[in-house]
Image 1 (cartoon, rainbow, N blue to C red):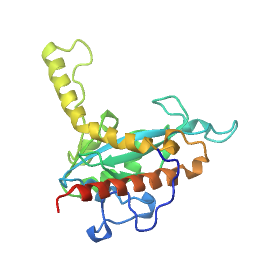
Image 2 (image 1 turned 30 degrees about the horizontal axis):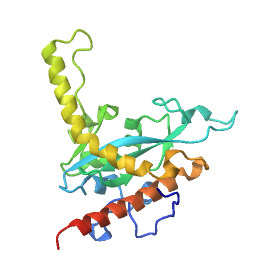
Image 3 (image 1 turned 30 degrees about the vertical axis):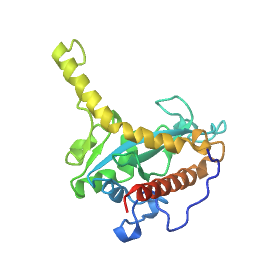
Image 4 (image 1 turned 90 degrees about the vertical axis):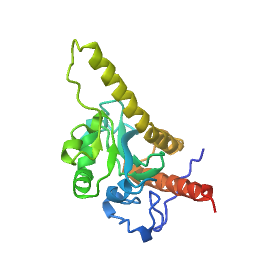
Length: 225
């Protein structure tokens, strides 16, 4: 486990895209490429997996404006949130700048421009959890989540069995993004950030860039000559 978080050079990217592949590096996405290049850079060129992850941070001082916006609605802790996109094998393709923990996953995705990029982009599929429900209709079905439950109470047995099969099948395809996030969290700086919150975005993206570079190198070395 390493604790160092060196800043990547201009040539390093968060994802296995090289400049020759035409992946733009927009300033708003820090050291990573845009989500458009990320969603089309998987091993099969068609599938990506998206999820949000949180990093605990220090509580803002008493009396500070917007002190409560860092409280996560999920874990009830002071945290910042980042959006991670991996390919079907769990290799990190994109890691967004951080947002306060109170920001919903779907709001974060919309603010990053994911809806526009997918709606106007190629026909890819992005696997997502229930936190992104609603993006499918806005992106022409490119974002795939579990359908809403038709029966909230007293559901028939056949429906429960069908829904459980769908849930397990979807989760088994999405599990790889959890592996990618786990590799990020192996870095102590992302287990709990004790520094200034203003610097956490740079730290997260630097680590994601280093991890993606390592994963790409491992993939290249594993290919037959």
